[in-house]
Image 1 (cartoon, rainbow, N blue to C red):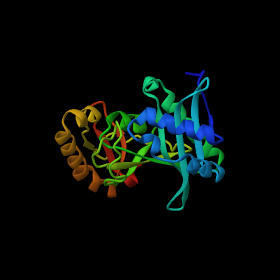
Image 2 (tube, rainbow, N blue to C red):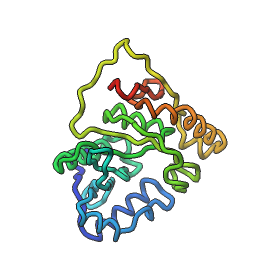
Image 3 (tube, helix red, strand yellow):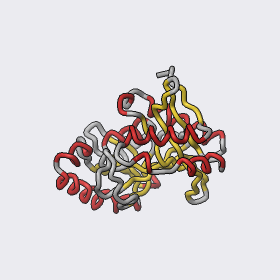
Image 4 (tube, rainbow, N blue to C red):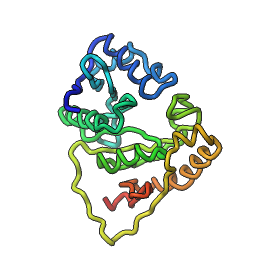
Length: 235
């Protein structure tokens, strides 16, 4: 994977390539989620836009905008994705670490992004692999996206928070008891095979996890695929 180069993008042709790569990652109309002219404006204004290249082919992409949460300036990552044949190769983590280095160089304190709480593999990657935590729950955040991953259902999202300089890991030990919330094995397949069951998962997650995020953060995931929650002041 070291042969693949990750770098910031410049020029209209590379913005067009990012849109094509997004279509390859998410399918459906994902290539139309953003226009090339907007990406050019975002790059000119100092936003983060990057691609991963295998020779001349873009095989991963990411872009984000400046955001403020409370008194902290952050990079909000809107999309980060890798083409299907290179998923689970480590390239996704490399893209996120490239983001982290960029944010640190700009003097930002954290990176935020949203993810579907029903997609277990994304939860594991964000919480366990990267060490982010989920701090907010948003109901039907984007509306129907109609792509190959999200389908046409409601798009509830968790907001991930990833410190640019990692905070010291706290050992909870046998102190405060944790709350665990289960996730489905493979919600993407379930959406395709049984949309009714997938929607029931959505409502269950919304009812169980959503209210808890007022006083808790999602700080990890166990080997069963359950989210682990701790009170916000315990981290």
